[in-house]
Image (cartoon, rainbow, N blue to C red; front, side):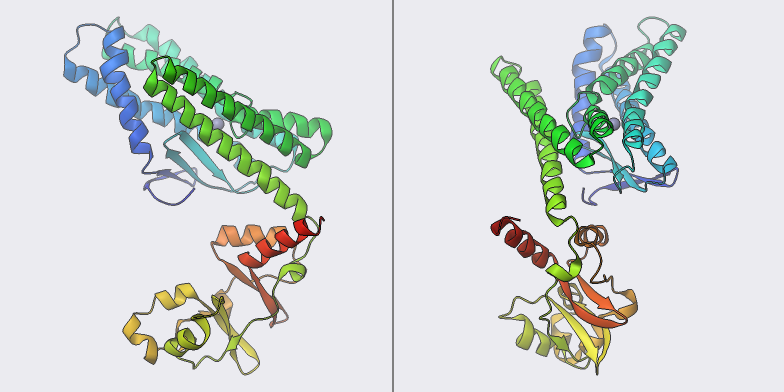
Length: 372
Ligand SMILES: [Zn+2]
């Protein structure tokens, strides 16, 4: 997911973030509680009290979601899998876990940890009900949180990848077949199927008069189907690229530019009218750095004639790079992680070529066309 949103600080070193889309679902939850659920369950409160309890309950509900995600993340970190962030967004919470688990067992434990946290929270809130008198705001709060945490745990155990239940399912198939590849394809396709079921059920609800609910369920289905599909596609690309090296896909035709060329000249001579978007800056036969479109955009237009490529380039020491023998798949992951569109391919300080995203896409297309 992208980085739009608000940072809430760190827990166990993991940054917790609110995506802007979360405010929509927060407002919806508050409104449902204050205008529907609480007035139905607890009569004769002043209106302001419904809203106040609604807001506090909604905040604690999303705190529960973060604890659920922390369940996944803590297990991941225990197995040395880096977690880059936990975000709340319109469809709930998500942990940004940076690598695939090393074994079926790790995946299983990581997946069940979230729902287990939700069920434990439900137990705690359930017991707290005994401490509060009937019809008080405190009772309303803990009763709802007990109920919603059970619902959260159960919903996440639906076996549609990428839901937790789908991950549990994938880990079981993985354990049985010994193949993560097979397991991902099977779980991904089941996830798509379940996504479609959600959409159908949502439409059915909407037609039956329950429009807002139906629309919501439909959107969740659409989101799940998309996430499962991208998982299946990623696996397919992974299969196609397996065993292939960077040297097979990189382009060796690149234009080296001298460090003293001005940005203006570079734009006029090399960028306009050519597809090239990144340049190797060479000082004599020594590689000095890399100049990307991003570097050029940093320079105000009127300074283009007086600014040299050497001044705005990324110096070699800071350039993310790869080697010709690196697995193509690993190089792709590196590009995604670092947010760059190209990696110079280097050995012993010499540049052999450039691996750009377009190169990998063209290579994949060629593989498919020749039927490999
Ligand atoms: Zn979960």
